[in-house]
Amino acid sequence: MESPSATISVFYDGLCPLCSKEMDHYKKQKGSERLLFIDITEAHFDAKKEGLDPYKVHQVMHVKTSEGLVMTGVDAFIAIWDFLPQYNWVSKWAQKSFIRPFLNVGYQVFASIRPYLPRKTRDCEISPYCPSRRKQ
Image 1: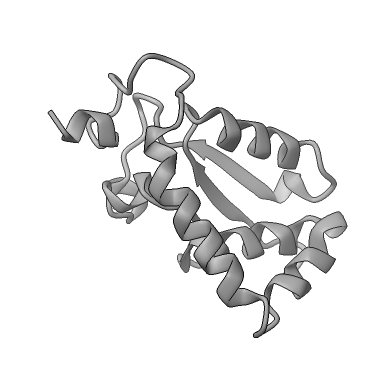
Image 2: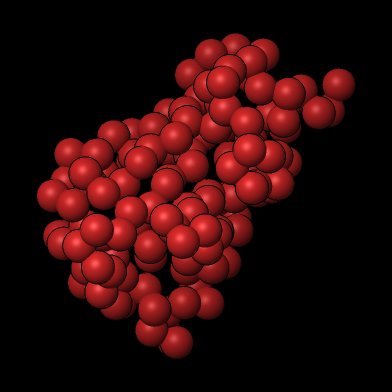
C-alpha cells in the first residue's frame, strides 16, 4: 500500500468520451485527492516537460508517481486503483497471474481502436501528437 503522502499524476485523453467519463468517476472517489488528473489534449500540456514520450502518451494510459516512476496500460490502472480504497480489491484481482494476460490483451485492443472512436470534438487540433493529426 502507498504511503499516505504519496501521489500520482494520471495522464488521460480528455477528448475520448469513455476515458473522460472513467476519470470523472475516479475523481469522485475517496482517495482521489492524492491523484492529479492531467488531460493530455489540453493546449498547455507538454509531455516532454513531464518526462514522457509525446507520442506514446497518446497511445496508452500513463501514470507517474511522485518519485518519477512511470507506469502504462494496465499497470497505470492498477496504480490508480491502489489509491482508491473502494478499488483496492480490483487492484489485487488484476495482479493475479492468471488474470493479468487477459487484462493486457483487452487493454491493447481498446488502445488500438481508441483513436477511431468518436471524439468530444471534431479532431485534436490543439494537440500535435493526436493520431488523427499525424496521419495527415
